[in-house]
Amino acid sequence: MKRSILILAAAMIIFGLSPKPAQASPYEGYTYSYWEEDVKSPIAYLPSRMITGQELGIGPFTTPSDMFAAPDGKLYVLDSGNGRIVVLNREWKVIDQIQGFDNNGKQNSFNKPEGIFVTAAGHVFVADTENRRVVVLDENGKFIREIGAPKSEVLSDNFEYFPRKVIVDKAGRIYVVARGVFDGIIEFDNEGGFTGFIGTNKVQFDPVDLFWKTVSTKEQREKMIRFVPIEFNNTDLDADGFIYTTTADKQTAVPVKRLNPSGIDVLRINGELGPIGDLSRERSAFIDIDVSSNGVYRTLDSTRGRVFTYNEDGNLLYVVGQLGNQLGTFKTPIAIESFDNRIFVLDQDLGMITEFTVTKFGSLVNEANGLYSIGKHDDAAKLWEQVLKLDANFEMAYVGIGKSMLRQGEYKEAMKYLKLGNDREYYSKALTKYRREYMREYFGIYMTMVIALIGAAIAVRRVLKVRKGGMKQNAVS
Image (cartoon, rainbow, N blue to C red; front, side, top):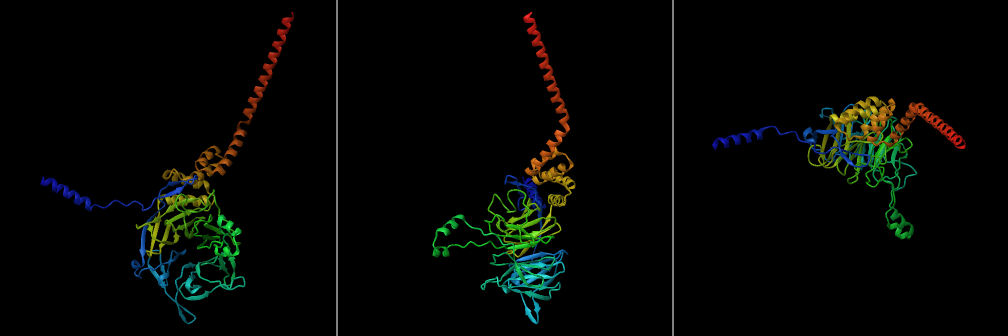
């Protein structure tokens, strides 16, 4: 009896001291089908590490508001509550802190800044929100200039300037998203001169409220809610200089836009719905956008803490993250950036950055989509086949293979894959080409058969006619 107890105790000790099995992902992977139903999908990115100001040895981040991943691998964190910029290298080591600067002989500091952007030359643009200016620093953190409120006769006398986000294109033009500005993004030239607004959102209204406004008195109308355009809340640039914007309003049908130099939305959408985040759950509210390579862009949803990744056609590739209290989940996600095959998400309340690294599935999807976007459909098809081995429900993989077969003239096979991918447009193209090819191949045979049948029918008719004539002659005789 004692021996049995000792053996049981030893077993408990061994199992208690043995390494715990690896934890599953703190969130589920999923995407949406053509029928707008969410379907499970492999995880594309997994959390690899997180870091706080305490771990960096610089004190906690206090309500950090933005970050920027530079092409050289540096990560700039805008620690708004502490009024500083923290610069990290690829190994997440602090290489600089910018807490103030000399502005023409006067020591200046930031006042609750909300946006940061770094140019290829290393110049740092900061939306110094409560100081109502954009501050420009060089690569060493030295003051270059500041850009104040826009000045123009078209602006009302009560115009208030609180810059929230800032981006700079290759020509040096500066674009500012400002709080309470409904006219669009404020544009400055490379000298800081105001040139106008770009990309004004359309007015959103309730038809019922509109009806009551038309039948109400002037006094009643003044008490009603005014119809005003929705303001932008964030922005980013792609390699071609197009401006991507987000709008947090859950009622808007176009929370993401891609603006050309004229301010016209040219975002490509493949299907009925564009990039709007969750479909079957509570509507998403995008608070940040990060444009990657090959037309891929990622939106950060504050509603459920999701990162939605779309390709240049507006197809959802995968979803990462969620709200929670584990590694890889967030409390108040506020900013997203990416570099190489890593994604960074900044949590404002927790003062923490979470890094996600790509999985095999995510790597295959990224590489296949990259080849697909530059027209290398045949090379992409080989990778899409590997994707389907990991996720048989990935519709875009079927479409990619179908388009490759369509280019190779394998129309019947293309139809099969395009049908599985629910791509009706290209399925119709494949069907048209298949019919044409089929008729071209078998037209001679069919025509020979038709002619033979016609000839046989004529011969039979003549035989029957001859027989009928012979029968009449026999009857007369």
